[in-house]
Length: 369
Ligand SMILES: *Cc1c(COP(=O)(O)O)cnc(C)c1O
Image (tube, rainbow, N blue to C red; front, side, top):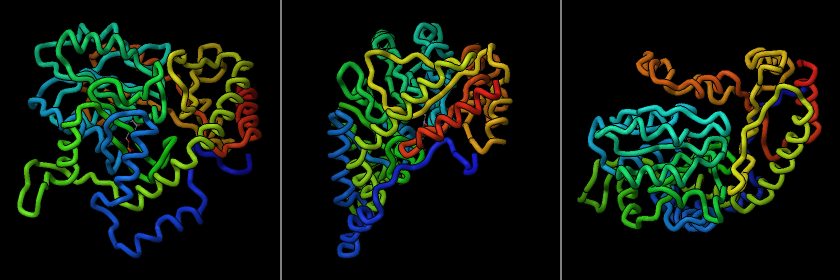
């Protein structure tokens, strides 16, 4: 390919639309601290995501850190989670001084293996933090059953699941809380941004305190909060992008379906199973390089890179094996997660990727085989 293709490309509204939308900021000079666009975006996202409560955040990582902090778990308590995710999920647990206990994943869709959760529960367990990885929905019913039986909180990392509906309801309405990421590389972006969704109204105030230093009044600080407020430029980017979200998803759908068609004819390429009760947001296109393919995942990654196509090994290594943890989790049985992490490759996927580019990418993969 002549031009370098990256794994993703940020969706942006027409330039004039954004410029027009930010003009009022020069009248008010109110550019952050829960301004009117922050409020507007919270309202519109509640509606779009089909959730009853939502708190906007500066990014997805802080959304998760503060969602966890909001539950006031005792220091050193254990959280059962998946290692097959972006490092943010694990960091948010560790940075809250909690202990991640990794549970293996299912080969079929990459989500946490609910049948292995119960064996990991101890008297120190306080929560389960699963991830709807690539927008693949976890086994919500089974996870909730276990949580109810042992009185655990469930916080979903739904960073990949923007707009996904499960059994007719917004994905963010399940569990005690869910977090979303609006990073530039995600399906919907506010440049950087994120949100926590939940149903307990009292949590709104708690999260408001946590994202604004715990400040309630000029002379009153009620909590040891961070600074995780979304500013007005980002909120306006979100409002503009949300206007075009249906076009964005439709364009992604066309790419997604074309990939599906192409990969059907390539021996040795396997795909994750999709839950029939969930809608798809076409966020990523992960492929698994099976034994029948003539190259390994790493060889295919290099081969594509030489041909100007930058794929990503999402998610390799698994978070439990990150260098910062000094191999302290190496004995945990995570065979499926490590196996999939060694075989997965995410191919380019974004709204204005052309079908010709997809055809070329798939042809290069075919010639590699
Ligand atoms: C992107 C992402 C995050 C973090 O979101 P940011 O907005 O980049 O801070 C957390 N978890 C997962 C699974 C992600 O992909």
